[in-house]
Image 1 (cartoon, rainbow, N blue to C red):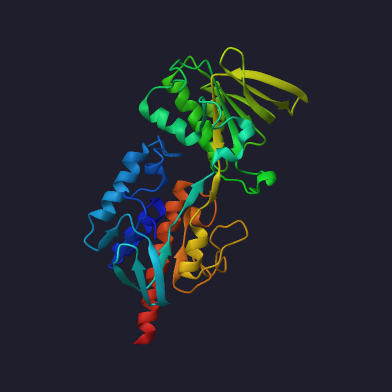
Image 2: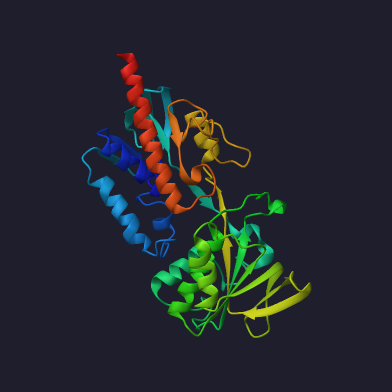
Length: 342
């Protein structure tokens, strides 16, 4: 279930083991969020999403062991590990020994942070919208087409926010935003980019490649602050109002574009998936893991596996690795069942 990066990796691994993989994707194209949301260059590889994910799609679609159902969902799953029957919304029926749920996430809807201007001001965008602009090769204010003098990226929009029920860190936003700042500067050198943050978490090896590089080479300005609101100024620009938490004083700076670094929500379909597949969800609404260390990629139902952002916020590289692992685990467990049955 799911034809995004994790699902494609799972299917490819199943195929490489000599088994048949059936991919069920609810959208009319494969590729998941990077393709559907028009991502620009992927982090950390720097490769264009359409090229990298395109190769993954081609690998699965060209494999004779693959069957792909687009614009379809599983409406009923019967049976048990080793002998499942899935009924699809397109009328097809699929026999399967195991199921991998590579169902991903839903982008946070910035409408839920109205005080930060999204949906009110045309020049307040999300990171996915800014990625699309980068992909077009031109940075311009949506309201009137002018080249922005200043762009502001607000971190943790829909993450680490108990007031709106999003207590978790979305893991990727800091690194993606630092990378986005550099991409904006490459296309529009005259534009100054600011990143407003509570904390910066460019984890692992990303610290030097993105955090320091964006500051030292691309002159991104990082401001540790708490944002109160985004409003319009008299000259048509946007005013970002808040408190600089390092010097403990109010700040109001005008910007031409404000970008919300939106977090990762559980897949909006997860309550339905939980019912159809008979699996549990953890308290935030992501798919619940089985025992952490001896049932890798497992769920609360035997024979059903998961991976990537279906479990919680995840990077694309780790989602791909987990998808491959889930495909391998499903094949190994199915092989063991067959061997046991004689």
